[in-house]
Length: 112
Length: 115
Image 1 (cartoon, rainbow over the protein chains, first blue to last red):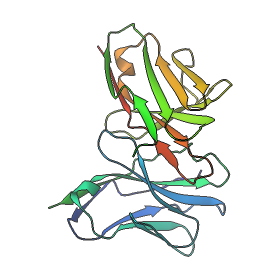
Image 2: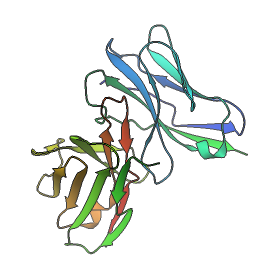
Image 3: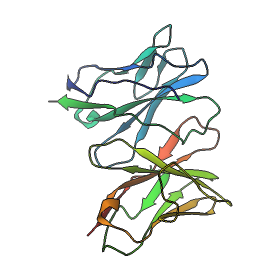
């Protein structure tokens, strides 16, 4: 699976949008971009994924650049409960959804 | 609600004893489950793939005789840490892909402390 690079930490004010970047410059054509988050002392939680189109669900939006070498996870109205470690993961289609390679992630801290 | 459940959430054991951690898929069958380990302030590291009805597949560097995995049914995988030592203290997390879904569901994790 392609390697990803994320900033180690970010801050965000409550109610503001949190934009978390991820670089995956070596991504292959059949690899998806996944985002998970891990709240302290809990198991990771799936957020969203995409291949090349932008995606939106009830939790977040995912913006993937046209060349697919980077992406941004957007939490439109961050709350204190969004404080967590956010992992950007690139996974090849056809491989098991459960077999994931986690990087160091971005620690997002949402301030009041 | 949770779709993958781990038990126990916390366990403290004495050095040299064995500890069993259970991972259950609650409303779906999982022929494959995954076990991860996470040390403090570190990321998750895949330890092994648990396969229902066959042997587990271990990642490089993971001792299969120390971390025994049994996938007894389509909804249950267990990880047994044998002859535990303080360096085995960690956060152990399981996951299971759900049918034809596109994501994995993770258990809430088990905090193991070996004293």
